[in-house]
Image (cartoon, rainbow, N blue to C red; front, side, top):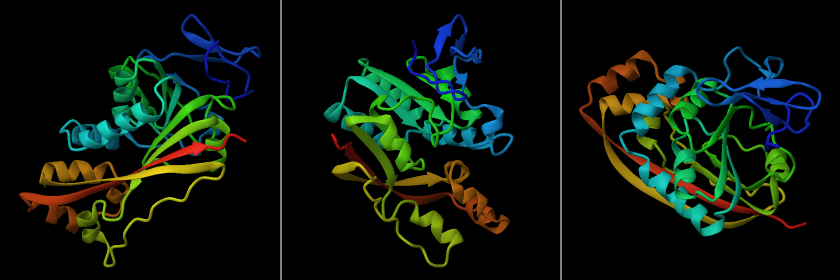
Length: 268
């Protein structure tokens, strides 16, 4: 029996050859890349939800330069401190940059990555074989109650009811969020009043164990800046004149600043 639940009837899914099936005979085929799509078309709010292919390509181009490697390693180190066995679910895994590193460093963890973007999951599953990837909504994840010993969320929305449902009593949530001055130099292109990011509140039913802050300033070329912008929501706000300013830059110093929030679900 797999860890997945059928998204249509919430019964356990069992792998039969190259597909998952439930007792009501709902079936979900594996794609050739190795992922499974557990987001039925009737549950979609748009034809192609989540990050599109252009955003996925931009994120991969940026991450392959190693600019966020320090964050990737910090997440691995946190997990090594708190939970190295059992089931880990990366909620909003994207193209698997953090997910696969966790799986490689912690072989005793059963690692799942889910994302609503088919383009992102397709890339992740094709490249990283140490994890189980699926297309699914993090607001209605295809797992049973108390499935996860540890949940990971990197820049993804947090749905409190799902966090509470998915985590085992005593289980952990590692949530990475922007800190006060994250990407402030990019914000100055599009906002007159640049407001700092606030730390997130503790989700209901959890206790805050620790909040780490990571800070790094990196000089980026205009090509890396374009990739960074395209992989963030800022892309929707950049107008032609903003892109022209970016093109004229040789380099720009950018502040990366993150909170790594470690929460634990209450036992009762």
